[in-house]
Amino acid sequence: MADDSRPLSELVAQGWEILNYRSSHDPSGVVVENFLLRKQKTHRILSVRPKMLGKGFVTKEIDL
Image 1: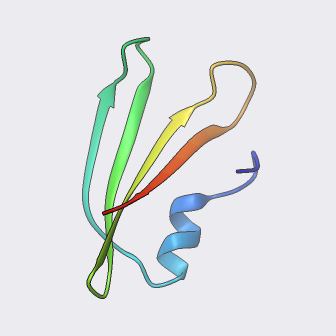
Image 2 (image 1 turned 90 degrees about the vertical axis):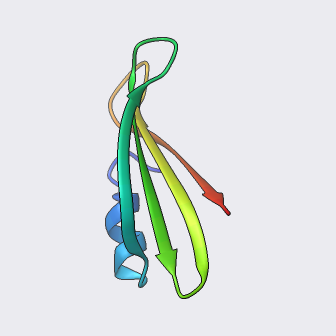
C-alpha cells in the first residue's frame, strides 16, 4: 500500500469492526501490530509493521 494510505481507517470505513489488537516483535526486533477485524460473519487479520528502509508501513491482510 502507499505510504499515505491508512489501511485500518479504510477498513473501518468499509464497515469492519475491530475485535482485538495485539502487538509483538518479529525476529528482527521490529514491532508488528495485529488487528482482528469482523464484518458480518467474515473475519480478517490486518498486520502492520514499519518499513525496514524508508518511511511508511508494510501491511498484510489475512482472511480467516
